[in-house]
Length: 381
Image (cartoon, rainbow, N blue to C red; front, side, top):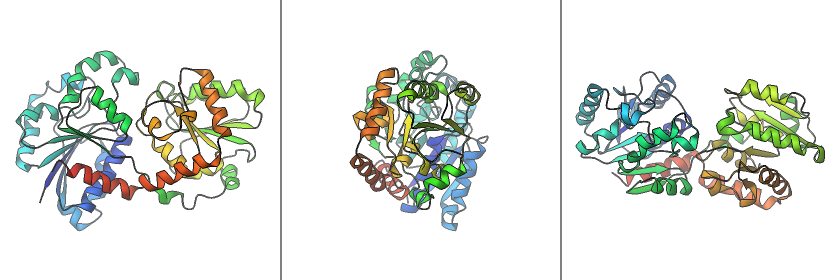
């Protein structure tokens, strides 16, 4: 019976950890492996999610043990991971006691979880990184990003392999110095959530949106630097005179929510819906989704929109390249290209919508994700 150690010492909770939890479920469903999860003790959302998985069956409780990691990911982790040698010794001792056949490191970016990489020369098993967002810090607009990238550059060459979520991101890893095998496992979404989503009239009434007209939307964390809600509002306002039937709906919360609400004042036919746990209830009211992101992995909201037959226009990068036709993609710094994509999307026939919807259902269901992730990781065991 194989043994797998799963390592995540990140104190923050993000989308990659949501997918990692589904992956853990898949490993338990499709194998008889014994799992040991080392998780940041203060990350209660992540720990609780793992405990929820463990409690799902008696068999899983026996095969999946969870403990707190002695290390913690911090900014400049590539350097600061050496500052606490005792924590690294404790981590090494726990790995030795468990004697895994492989180690899976859950990484939000290449810096997170890198404390374990210091032990790779002393380990006799492969170390595999699950990294949905392999971007450099400068690309992501992080503070002192270029300096952090200098400290992190060598990290891409340390794991024995990677699991990522699109071919474009796999190519990015290779450019940054990754070696060994790279497996691509597309994100999965819960398609059953959309089986009874209601009608357009019901959604518009619930969220106080006019039912008539063409409804653009941007859904996600309101953070201008990454997500670009300010760009969407700017370009929408500029085209209103020639497109009086159009409405714009922002769904979400975040650090720039107040700034967005202020900027919306005086611009007609623009609406804001605070974040809703079940975003599928909003989809019937929408005609198109806009994602002018500075960077992404493969956005779950994009896959969810496509699964509902809603076309998506997005910045020309990352996982959007792997999914969207060129006409729906644009340079986020080019306002004319942004507006042109809006026009092209509105004039696109139904064949693109139906083909992308079929692709999502074929490749991005949670059962498919779990099975493919298990098979991908199994190649290192």
